[in-house]
Amino acid sequence: MKTPLGTFDLFNKLTQRFERASLFEGIDESNLHSFEQDWKIAFEARVPADATTVERLAANAQDAHWDWRRLAEIRDNPLLYQMYAVECAGRMQGIMLVKKGGRFSRHPDHSKADLVYIDRLSTAPWNRRGFVAEPIYQGVGVLLLATAMNLSFEEGLDGRIGLHSLSGAEAFYRDVIGMTDFGPDADKYGMRYFEMSSAQAQAFLNPQERDGA
Image (cartoon, rainbow, N blue to C red):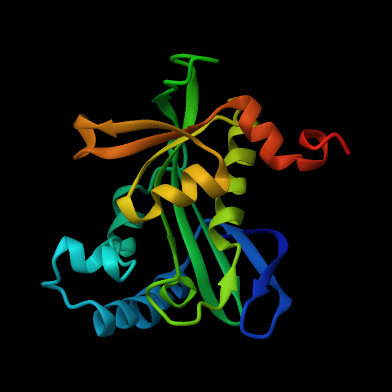
């Protein structure tokens, strides 16, 4: 079931203006169609299926092989998983799959506490630096991560979230979002593991309190 959660501003870097985007809990066929007809075609035109890992990294397309239709089918359990989509200007700009609980924190502030785990997060290829010369929308990934933090609060998990990052996104999670980097995880193909603690999530969602305003 797809439910609107509200509208939010995304910055259009081409027009230098903010535009209203819609955030949805759950996805529908229109989102899967957008992935298959807009995203996938863009990926295939830029990065061939036989591209090397290095070529995918250089093109900011390490997630190009993710099959969101298949993910929606095998993760179709609303008690454990939830999907979110961001839409703007008639197209899907971002999509996220999260697991609600069942994963445990590594952060020293609350070791082994439950958290919301981000299984997958992708933004549209035309919003990516390195993939296109001039990305369009800024803020899609930030909106989706804030959504995961809010879900964590709703689930009684105090804002805690965790994820394993593709190498091309490590700087975004560490330097832009401010997540704690726990280093490579041998159990997850050496991907770096990141967490947002309760205090970090609170500060991220309430910057006025963080800055003392």
